[in-house]
Image 1 (cartoon, rainbow, N blue to C red):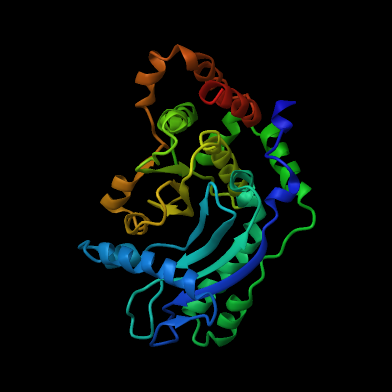
Image 2: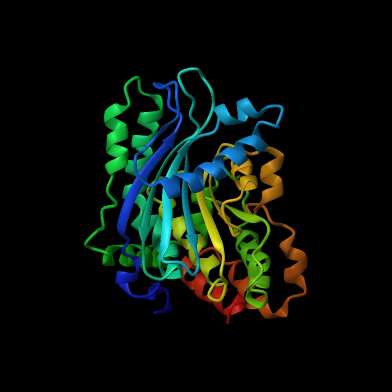
Length: 337
């Protein structure tokens, strides 16, 4: 019964009043391109990217890191705010092969951020796929005029059947076991111990419940399956667990879907859109400094061994047949009460 409980009223996950922008460098132009509207949003993201690029180019192998990086889907959302920015970042270059990303983004309004956030991978999936495809085409084609026009006008289509996101997520929770999730992740993570990975989320974010005014300095890097049909649901599940710790927090979150060391990951940061985060998205030492990769978290055993309060959860996580819905409820009870 508890696993069927989802995140609040359906209207709260309905994005509205959207406007789209683009800017950056593309292969068919020798100059910087940008949309005619959305100057404030462009300035905000451009500052983040420009300062992040300054950090990146200080790396000796930065060109290789940049050229081998794939697209990055992002969502910037404040836990207490009613507006958010969703977009795609493509590592681009202009006609003279000068490197600078091409970004397309959509500013929109929503209801409660912490109600919207867990289901955002499902709600935004169609829009994100469309925006990413247009962005990639614009950055690589020989004639981008029509595509740029489409990006400036791209609509965030609200799905009238909002209940299907709740229903689809509830079904995923009720039918997906811990063992089956581990199997879905295993092609990229041989021998992953999801018990340790899930406990790591709890132990790393537990301090937020007591010190909710202090945002974690480092972000979380969470594993995703390669299956594009399953990935949005797993993203939703990770975000659902994280949101258990954020009801009193006033954080500026960055949610990034990309590839890290050749595998799909979800990255969540808590300190706004800092240049260091942009730098870290391209891997290397910067990623190790900015993100905690919870895929392999053997360090939790030391905590779990002396933590009687979470003994039940730790034991639950030994049983691969338990559903993600059951584990979500046990996780919430263990860490947030």
